[in-house]
Length: 435
Ligand code: 5AD
Ligand code: SF4
Image (tube, rainbow, N blue to C red; front, side, top):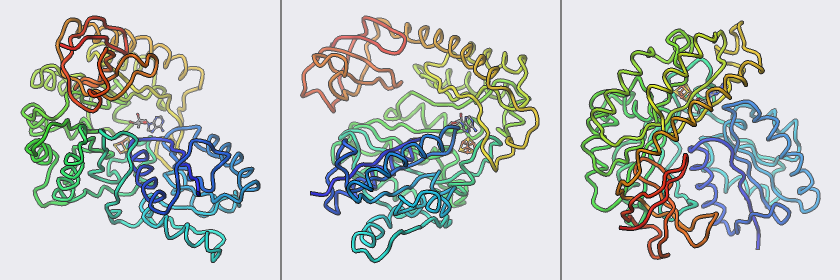
């Protein structure tokens, strides 16, 4: 029995692509394992969005060298870091047998075949063709939650971000294809469909055939069955009124909306090329809160972008206090070679970045605690995901707004929607009982 493992770094798109690679490997007769020492094949699915990627991946490749020497395991690498580095990576690390670009993962079985049959020593595919990867089936971690890419690439060129350079320009998947894929998963009993893309609410724009994100949401909401639709990540600038309206009227669209702010200062937002000011952003949040009652908002924030002054940073804290996010993903700015911000002269010291991050985390934790308290004594529908990791007697699920709820239930409830009443609110977790 041949054994394989996929090690995934990075975003939801990578996790989705790993699920597809897993399916291909299983179809080829590989069994998945969590024990590296027994692997006959290892794929690294890499990320290059933030700092530390290279160090982490080089470290892992060092470990894999041993595995190759011991067992002759096949070592493959894919994802944005592999795409970015291309063939050079193979020269640096002769351990690697397969270098596969993001858009070429469909060729993995063919590449493995070539190595296994000894026809080739290594195989490199890193074409960044401006076409859509063919639809591949996936083996997700959960039997109830599926992620579905609706667009690949990004046209925004935020000045700190490497994504448009490695994942190419935005290409939307045709609406009929998405609808049919969603239908397939719902028919198989999936209860949560997460639409993914770098900028989901600009979906369809480049097609110029009338397809749009709001139309997609409405069409998916009309499908029969009991399920939730989530999406990550939208861009504040593309949050047009039709999108807000579609979320408000679609009862199957879950009400956690991730609205990446990145920075609070209008001056920094301009340097980031985000296309909105602090005021535009706060106006959008007000609109979302008014039109979508019971919304839970989350965000991404970068501290220490080049040139960020103390005053600019206070604008970020001000936005966090005003919006009261349930949750934020907070990052220190890190230089990505090849982006515009990497060339900016006023880079901020690590010390200042770290100090700002700690202050931000404090303010955000307070907001998370405040928003969590709003759930007290509320009766909510949750999707039950499984046993609680900490206490096997208890079950865990998530609300429409993505808040984790722990409660006592029975195993038949896993993968279904149940109603619970909240009786305790901690910062990150709610506790409740079935009603
Ligand atoms: N430095 C720090 N954070 C970054 N992100 C993207 N690029 C960088 C960078 N160079 C963050 C953004 C984005 C999230 C996925 O990663 O906040 O929304
Ligand atoms: Fe990067 Fe900006 Fe595109 Fe997001 S919207 S992937 S941050 S360029």
